[in-house]
Image (cartoon, rainbow, N blue to C red):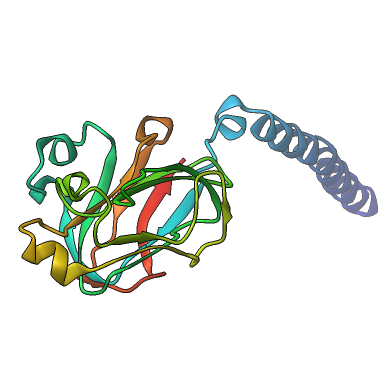
Length: 197
């Protein structure tokens, strides 16, 4: 009887020992294989960059702009804002790359490489700078929220021009997508566009 009990105990200990040794070894090998699997290493890291609104106003889809170049998205994805006040603020921290002499359009390059075009009104280049007052110059470094341009909404409209302002990511093709806000109205410095990289 004692030999029988010793035999059972020995078999139990031996089975437990083998399971312990080989079972954990398999688990370790499985974990190592999972960690080095290409699917885990190749999982893309999605990065989001937020672009603030440069204006206070009503948000409109870009394709509603009465200008085919903007509406078609030929210059890039973005959104349009019907302004309620005449100040344009920097939606990013970066550099003023382009400032039209007329003051109606400004191009910025953010510190992380996003190219933003702000075009105040439609065909407003024909005003030759009247009713526009730039507060920066080409080459200036700007911080998010800095005043870029002031313009007279009422006088521009009285002169027969639309003040709807496209805000476009001109290097859209460098990113996975550009998503616009779902807010119908927006304030300066609110999130306007989300860049998915």
